[in-house]
Image (cartoon, rainbow, N blue to C red; front, side, top):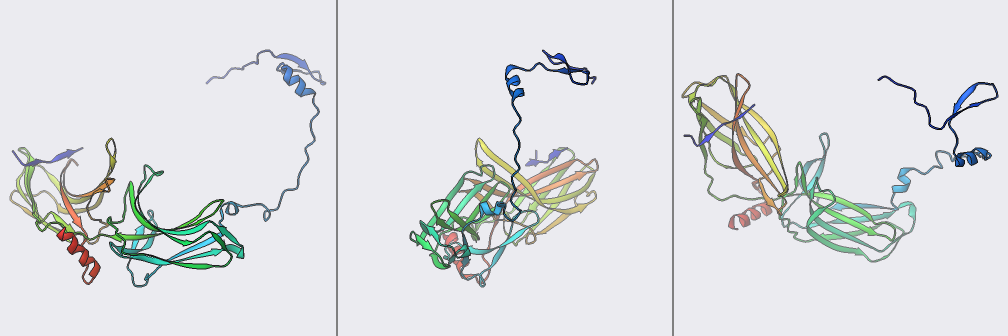
Length: 376
């Protein structure tokens, strides 16, 4: 018996008359087929047609556009402080677009300026202006509900009027940002600054996103992964990875040793799989995506052969491992060893690994955060 087993993949048409119709003659003596009018139709038939009066249409310049209906009477600019000295993260909006977002750490203050500018010099009446710092978890399958786990607010102006541009300062000191920002398949965790100009008709709202990194150090014990797997009387291999926990710029080092080979193996590859779990039972969603495929062997191996593994993680779009974030979602990573035989059948074995974000050298706040996490 082995510790584990590989999993195998493999007209005709016809005229229709009208009921109650009678032949009637016209002025030309030709018999025509007319439906029998109902009493209401007779009254309508004796009415004189109304003369349609054409009205002059407004020109294209006079016609209101969609931007007219959805335009706001005020412009709002949000500027975060120290952007020149702060790192930025490329956040993927869709397949072809990315946006640079300023990077913050847990415990850092979020401060900046808000400029409210009435359009066309018109007077703006409002019932108050406020700024908020918000952290939310958005489920893509439940877009109507956003789960706020952080909400801080400050009043910028009391009810009154604005006729000229006015700038307000805000400062959220030493904000605890307990979760790292995340943009997944079915879930998004985001932090943002929101400014609201309250009005009697409709509020004017502007938001500005920022990105948060959280540095975590796993327990000091970092045991290796070692397993004997195979298919009875066909294949028996032993694989080993040097450790089970890696930082995002780490290198996966290991080896594969063939004890028995009776299958005609075409090639072998190592994959990194990200598995995202959102929601709670029974409304739970699981999504898996293969982030990278790395071919480690081409051709059939012989008995006793050893294949080395060396995979650099720094070039891939990885996040730390997340477990039960606010009891809303989890993200786990797996190393998948895949063998393909000459008949294109696939055999694979997966092992979970833990990824974490290591504090860079010289980043004092991040190093302090690491120490606190190690103690806790």
